[in-house]
Image (spheres, rainbow, N blue to C red):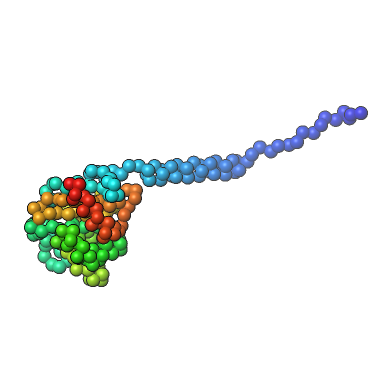
Length: 223
């Protein structure tokens, strides 16, 4: 027999506002993380906006001004004192190295390795190495002295020349510094070869000397 009492139903308490608040907060965090993650993926996969001739098989970009164009003249202060003009080297082949500067130790290592490869540089037809970065002149001079480097080192502190050569498009700090760009200016003042290594998203801070000279030789031959 059954009793006349109605069965008791389990009591279910409504969710508290506090608990609900926690759930909403966690959901918002998950959405936020997904959005940020998606943004980083999008930035990493976006095509480089560096301009110029695009990436080559050698793994570098040929920016503008490029081969066959007259190299823009410049006059910049030198760590050796006075100013240096590109036109001072007319009749010689000059390799301009636009680099990131003090925050990039591999850049200075690259300069050292190029200096130590004088015979290879000469065989490649390079008469002079001229380095250009945007740091203050006195700090560049101190760094050159500390590293015992002897190349011509010029200060383009306002990036005026770097912007003309558009080498500031390849730096990790956006347009605030150079990246890792080489421009070979021939005896007549024409650009014979150019290589902008790295750029978003695959930045490069060091290029082996043999690769630079190999790319230079191949680029000249292609031109």
